[in-house]
Image (cartoon, rainbow, N blue to C red; front, side, top):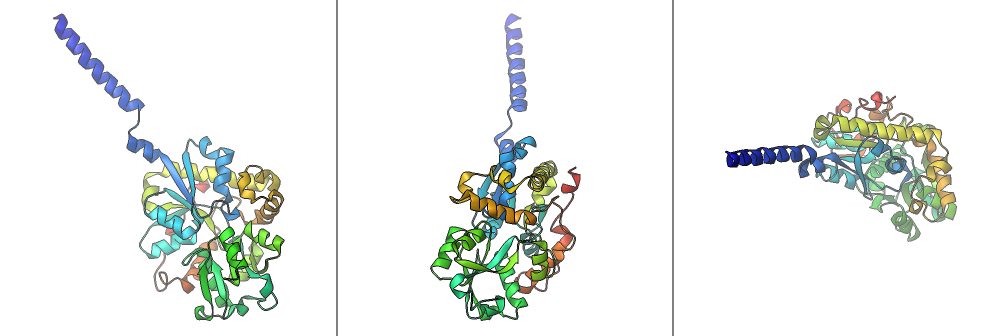
Length: 341
């Protein structure tokens, strides 16, 4: 009798311990699913400042999120990582969601970080007297971050508004930051599309001058005919359907970050960023950040006119989009940012 009791007690104890363990310790699949990896198309660019700022302010942790930030040189590379399932979200230009819909991929922006491109077309200083506008690009080389990138479509559209055909100039992918600067110095490109802090570095060194400035709403409307929402947080539609609570937390963390940007000085924001982002010149970084403050969205919402302007620009030169019906309502959602007070 005692022996049977001991056996029953052992079995019950084992079952209880196993049940307790299964509740207390998540499976490897559950643990992996709880982590959110965000790929950024150039994490040290000011157009992509919000994710690192959100991390350093502790806003992801406040939401109970385990977020890892990774970086790629160009937004098109970050997009590929998302489609491969290597990351759960991307911080890149919103226009990728339009391009991907044309390829049968469902991707949505859940938070809009920039309301304008936040960049400039710049010309080498030794050519400044010869190249005074995009019209003078004929016969010259245009530097972009990558072929098929957002910068390439924007640059081509600006050239077309000046009456040029794509055959009138050549394009060369030069990346961003140091590789772009090197391409200018080596005279491999004549005109480049770039963003802060690279623009301020080029202006400070005297190596380039501004052709087109899209760091403000007024400048963007003059160049493109309307606002062009740029950097956004976008995810795959399939992930969004099964991770709405996580999407809401991500949106809340990013909107809080945008609110921080609106209510703090460039000096205060810079103090929250890694020192290696300064490029060895903190004063220049602060100056560049101060010039960039108008580019950030105050609330993470998509500007009403934005999607149509982006589609117009892309449809002009993206062969994937020409002749296809694009449902813009499926490329972004304000559902989650609208929940943030």
